[in-house]
Length: 91
Image (cartoon, rainbow, N blue to C red):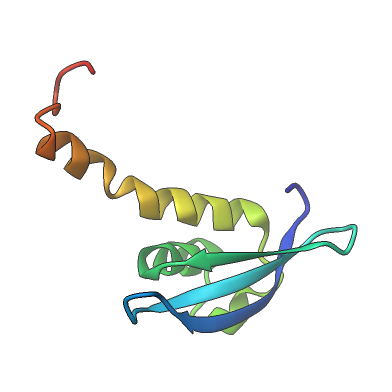
């Protein structure tokens, strides 16, 4: 996805009614992809882009979107290990 940038943002409701942000990534060849971001990913993306509002994300690159998705999903990593009794040992 090198070179893809955010071309559009809009709010949407998740299946449980929480607000999510849907960003449209536009590629150099004109192609588009939609990416849905949960609250944690949105906070991470806004911070890394230095943005105060969703509209300021237009033009931000895919790499920041990817990093925000990773940050959001990573928050569960330690929780799952603790729940499964795997914390601090090799699995």
